Amino acid sequence: MKLSDFDFDLPEELIATRPARPRSAARLLVATPSSITDAHVRDLPGFLRPGDRLVLNDTQVIPARLSGTRRRESEAGVSEARIEVTLLQPAPEGHWRALVKPLKKLREGEEVRFSPRLSARLVRKEDGEAVLAFNLSGEDFDAELARAGAMPLPPYIAARRPADERDREDYQTVWARRPGAVAAPTASLHFDEPLLEELRAMGVGMTHVTLHVGAGTFLPVKVEDISRHRMHAEWGQVSAAAAEEINATRARGGRIIPVGTTALRLIESAADEAGRMRPWEGETDIFITPGYRFRVSDALMTNFHLPKSTLMMLVSALMGPARIREIYAHAIAARYRFFSYGDASLLLPED
Image (cartoon, rainbow, N blue to C red):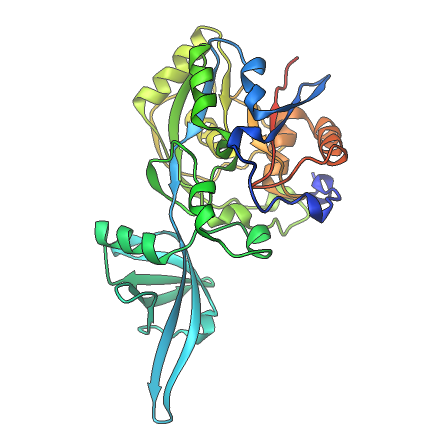
């Protein structure tokens, strides 16, 4: 298929820059092959069944955006440059891969200071990215990063406003526990404790898995022939207990419903051809496009995605390209809010 097959016109005012409050007050579009229902996330229990299982990504977003200063001494005197850093992922030897702007103003061996206690030295440049060595590690690094860093809002929000203290709570799921993501599993941002308690009480199971979402999730597809696109790799883990919970639910006839495309991509990577889950750990670059046969996912709760994105291709694979075009046309006409802080959809490929 072509990239243009996944394009659509989206009014800019439908791009959300703040989430709904409370979280479960966000709108929820529920779609099957033959129906579309307008609801709210708080209504989710009415669309699930006892015995269903939600799969939740428990990654925790780190405050990966840093602003610092590079000082350079020369015969002409001392010069300074403002340097913006977005951490991408840990690298060998305790280093970090990062995006640095402007990278051309930083030489190998030079230091950028972000706070009185936190600084980083440029080890090398690779493929337009930087490899940085920080002066702190372990808990000391985590603590100082929490003080000096900002939440790494997606580009389409960051272009409209800077991150602030509200984002430290808003851009984090209520069950986040494993630090390492530089982007949130955004469908999960709609859940609050009252909703979780109601779901548990009605017999909906919940399984936690981990996929550390990387900044590559925002990279555009640059080739018209989508078969030539190469996905970024992200680290994930499915524990033995999580695999067994999912297998047991399927054996009982319950539906497996990942919350978010990150959870879906992870469990599809960990399932065998027969749909049986196994413990799994490693990097996945699975690219799901129309024609893909889903192994273990029966449905999906997800936000509304960018035109021509890999996530539009994924939801098109689940519901069918023609049906997704109808769903998105309805969402735009009904003024649903799009992207990371926007509203949600529950996609059910069977009536």
